[in-house]
Image (cartoon, rainbow, N blue to C red; front, side, top):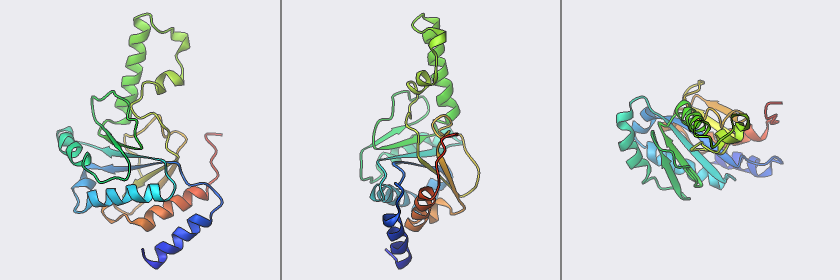
Length: 202
């Protein structure tokens, strides 16, 4: 670890505010084609747990679903410090692991599937329409937890990811591309989070 990284790590340890317990990062399929992308991902997972995270969600936005099987195969072999759950298009089983990876499932698709499930339950007479609330939707999401900190690399724009879950997340944008993302970039994001006053929509 370089001198500047040590300085940032010290600032983090001395900070009064808690670090984010659940960290999410959004990357693209193109990011994963870059040399060293999976090594960066493995290191990112290590940094997150080293600096206080209890859960990490990786959201991979995908334009071409034909690449999903290849990405899924590669991502299942990522060297992470905790168990990994990988989900993609068509998956409905909840991702319940310290490290969850979403490959092209998409927030719109996940939300639509949850609404469809509710509609089917109402149509079957198993659910009263008046009892439909946010909890009913959350119970049907593949990725149910809300990230405290959501990091987007490479550009200041949102992708089709965690639409429902990230409504109260603290968003951190960096123009550093994924291939160049380093420990210091992660520590900057954590320190920025610790310096914020979370309002949860208030």
